Length: 539
Image (tube, rainbow, N blue to C red; front, top):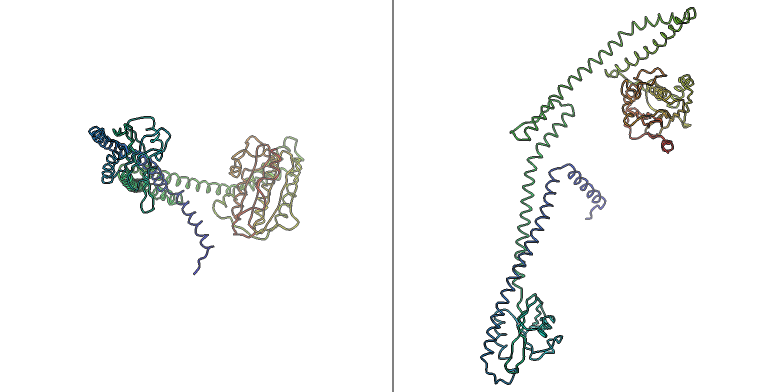
């Protein structure tokens, strides 16, 4: 039975992503792992230091013990040599009589012996006479540096070495200490060198035991630290997680959610403060909701109530405006101003009524297949007098094929008209380009001007009700300050996007994006929000 490598390849990245997500979201895991890593570094450093100290202490103790044993052996040998008769004529026989008991004693006590004759510095052990050593020991275990030392100096000396032994044709090596001392043989009156080689196998075993003990203690200590850190962080993280869940429910609109307060510690005081904050927020939100409801009701009522007197005033103003040719110049000017301001007031009233319908949720769509290119051309034709008045040319860039979207033609036309009149109002007599495009999922209209532009942060505020970038600027188009807000509401009603880009003195671009089919979610726009000539303008 074979596995599916493709499925396994998908499983590993998925598990990795889950692990990374858990790592990013879990404070407890990060704290535990960080504490464990730092503790592991500290434990490893302390363990290494302790192991070095133990090793040094064991080596120093072993060296002191070896030197003491060699000193005793050498003292006994020298005592025996002083009591030996001086008429001995055979140095080899005297050396064997002297060294053989030491070799036998060394085999019983666990050390080896090498006995060599006199020689100058630089000569090897093989070049010196009367070579006696413990069976199975390789004489080369004695370092040449120590051999050279006794070629020109006297007195005891020691060093570390590697002891090599041969048995049944197989050689083995182990660390050891070699101590050399010189003896004066009465037989020929020359100085001979006696080397004692003590293995350090017991020291290695002790160090291995200490190392295993330190490793075991370190692992147990790290596990204990991890468990304690987990428990301690859990006591802190659990209330934080509860607070997060309550905060998420509050953000979702469940304003009655509160934290349970237990104890009198800092976390309990934090929970109490959180609950007080939630209570204050709930009260303020309800007050704002009530104020907003009253405000919407007021706007709706006032807008409806003003319809009747406005109609009466409108009729009277129309009569005066029609008869203005019979008036003197001042009265004629007053009649014209009255008609103009009545037009502005009626436009404002219509916008307020439309806003009140949006606030009340009473706005509905009358859907139909709409060609955005035709909508744009109708809007430009209707706003041409305003553009001519401002000496502004409006260009249309549209493909040859229709850019159709399922939408409410009246509302889409109102959106485009608001965008074009806003561009004319701020273009400062420079050219305006209206671009239309569509793909399989969306259709879009972008209105680009090269006027005053937008400062940082104003691209989002420009859709607020009654907001103006520069209140000192006169509105040549007679706007009410609600046009872009209504356009945004119309766009949201279609499930589309209405976005703005701009830079000071480099112009602005507003982009309307609608789904080709009503109810389909938008994922992209066929037109860029930042215009293609933005980089050229900046340069």
